[in-house]
Length: 293
Image 1 (cartoon, rainbow, N blue to C red):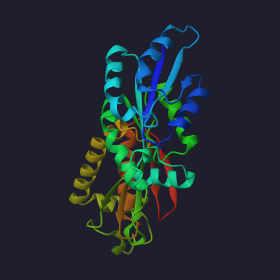
Image 2 (tube, helix red, strand yellow; image 1 turned 30 degrees about the vertical axis):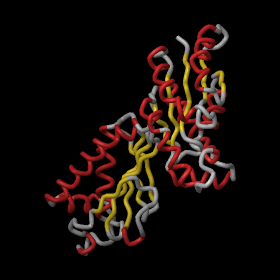
Image 3 (cartoon, one colour; image 1 turned 90 degrees about the horizontal axis):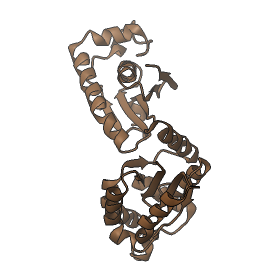
Image 4 (cartoon, rainbow, N blue to C red; image 1 turned 30 degrees about the horizontal axis):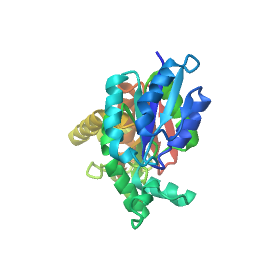
């Protein structure tokens, strides 16, 4: 059976780069396909013995896309179940940055010339919601450069799903909340080893600090709550196409409580999700290491 991928999504989300990478991986690629021609193209590819795998790119650049793409893609899924739809997306802030750097006009400008870039991106996201909802795979490129994207696509094609990189990050609130954090947990209510003279010079990476914290019922309950949330949320992040997820754990200085909790949580996540790459990072100690399951 031939491998045919319809590649679509938001402007600036990396579709052109993905198409180039897929072409390097042996796919026959056609860019800016009119929705009305999509089904005929799929039939032609099916009938062409020289094409084993193909990528068809279609998006808002085509004037008819915003009006009929969702309905046409629904019929494609019905009539050609072997065809997969990949939807590319990125956070609004990242899309604004990309368009500002390239100085290219947003394709939606032709429909709403009086709107600014942020409004155009928001409008396109809203219009593309029905397309995103029927996609087989959603790929979020917010945290990816072109090399990350190429590795990501290779993982999908070889294993059927990306290998998500999960970071459990400790930090001190006094130095600010990390901008990379997708979720933040505040552990400043736990007993503070800083006030124990023999523990003050140590960090949460030391067993003595972990043993002190684990002697309290609230620490054990907190660990369960944090881990249950991570266990619940990670599969949804995977479904959304995230490639990097950061769970940040903060205490006052980022020396004892957050470090110990991050270490313990990272071990549990690595053990429960062996298909993911799990890292523990201690911002204030400038330490980062992979946790092997």
